[in-house]
Length: 367
Image (cartoon, rainbow, N blue to C red):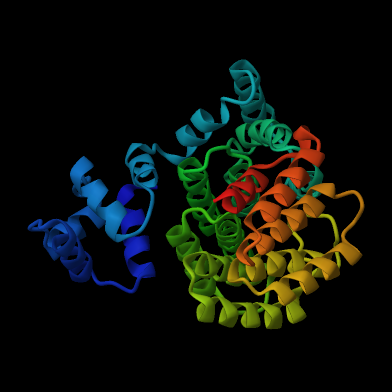
């Protein structure tokens, strides 16, 4: 995905015209940027240089590394191979990819079954294990993309892969979420297009990372369809978390109310899959949101409701709730007690069960 597409997405997410973006850059940095030059960026006629990348990073409220990453990004296939090669031996990836091309890989139904298995595994396995396994699958599926439904498979695998990427700046994860959205669009499947964007929004919003891009993905999901679905629910809750982190309490509460209405129509019965949002997981979303807003009673009620139904096989999510509780204590003024509670919770969980999200939540409590 070219830098021009990202600039356009971020601009339209803020409701700005090309002229307004040029004006904002000029006001902040005293440049002579005009609407036509913004248009040339968006049409990929010109690539912004380092100075203008810093300007855009500031006025669009997006990490500079995200923009720099898009400038350097290659095509879908080469980017997938290059980014996935780190976790496992290169020869294994090459062998798997060529074998799929020469002999054919799994059929669509087999891929759907694999996705269901990964959705369950993600909830309890460590990030490194999931990343290693999904890397190999991406090397295979990229050789089978003649059929639209397999673009949907690839989109969901890439979304899962993005969730395993370490690093607090979020630039590489954002790149994968954007590739996933593009792949979902290639599939032509509305459900996948909404779900991938909604999942990206809740991941980034829940983590408190790349908030402008979380909003962008949420807005895109809602523009595609407002029909009640898990993708729409994720988008609403991701946007609510982004608002809460910014301190916009009114917006966060309004989005939560809408999210509750969508959950009533689209909530899941499946309890242990990343592709599901059952009652306990909805309360995990609400627990953190209320803690961020400093609404102690709502946070406690959500934590108690989540614990009543949380499957015993998912101890990592119990740790999430403990971290929320620590954040709630800090917001209530008990800084020392909140930090100690959060640190102890993460130390109790075996290291192989840790995730990037838990580390980011602890950092939020520490701040």
